[in-house]
Length: 352
Image (tube, rainbow, N blue to C red):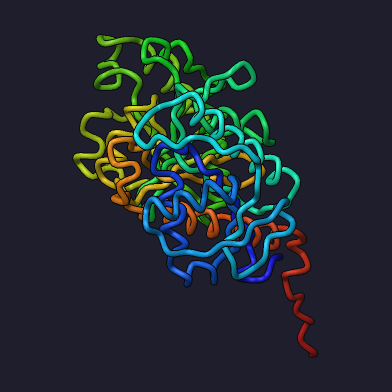
């Protein structure tokens, strides 16, 4: 296990014209953050220097050519490129997307090669990142290809966890994409993550209905009765504490979510609208189910305030702490399950 405080935290810088760099630098403007991890930012010295100057952020950093050269107790910047891209705060430019992907690819490569332990990704623009060699709707899909495991988009806070059956697909395609296998796979991934990443021994999982009022017994669509309910029953019969489907319109308003360790929503907005309403600025986007730990803040590029020094780093800081905690929880889980027999003290029989 790694020493406390020695975790190497990789940071992909996101869209250069958004608030990603700002919230990352503001997070580590507080020197106490260096007690928890060693930050490794994938960008360039010139870009970080310019952002520092433009935004009035008071930090010093250590430039390195490779993540393996990162020094504990300092903010490290890996020089991924020698170019000097033009920063145009608040604008979605092709160049902004190009360098966001350069940073992400370099960070993920370092993560795969164990040069960093965990990854926090700053926000990207899903439109300007598209290229001949990058056709993904977001971080989650790219990471699912690059890393091992079955990915689950998991929005988390201390008191609320919401995962998605389907994430970045059109609403018209949602019902057709939800199959018994998908339901089983996502619930199993969520259950495993709750146990391994969050230390919950017997997690209770609620599933939200696909249609309004969970289909009203087939009156508003048959998917809930024919696909969702049988899959949930099958999981429950096998020992997974899965319940539902619940009508999504009243589930959060009635505080029913407080009775569960996590909620699995059928599609993106069904889960993220209530999550962000209840937790915005404190929430973290976690890609569960993969062999490496990646988190991100719960907001986007926020072009409207980019370059003005107004961005709140709260969610990015939460993403850092969440990644560190999950990494530690995984280490503890692996350690506890390495050889259970060795952890039990065998009592000698009492002498007669």
